[in-house]
Image 1 (spheres, one colour):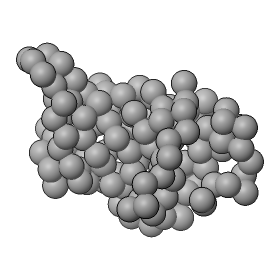
Image 2 (cartoon, rainbow, N blue to C red; image 1 turned 180 degrees about the vertical axis):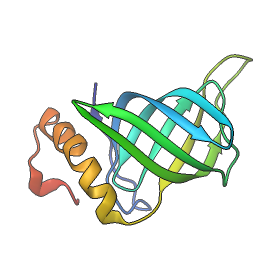
Image 3 (cartoon, helix red, strand yellow; image 1 turned 60 degrees about the vertical axis):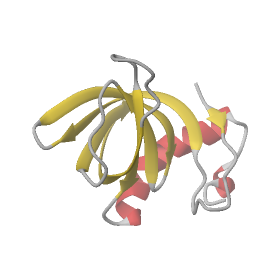
Length: 125
């Protein structure tokens, strides 16, 4: 389910490769999607359609018994679909306070660290 991804120098926070079903909401649209990687400040999402770059979105998913609801904006529209009906990917940068998302994402990231055999002290690397 999870693979540790190396953190390129340009990234502030570490990302983890995951496969978490989610719902993305923007304007009048709602899509079912999959989170491909996640960090405390953003996520890469795969879906059959993608919001435009700059769109404000809400990303919702369940982790364990916790419902997670994160707001953000689309920072990149990375179209990898070769043909009609194939999935596209897009990046979302989470907004609001880091503390708010830290509270919601800590259980998720902690579980990812446990799967990769790392401890809590590594959460800010």
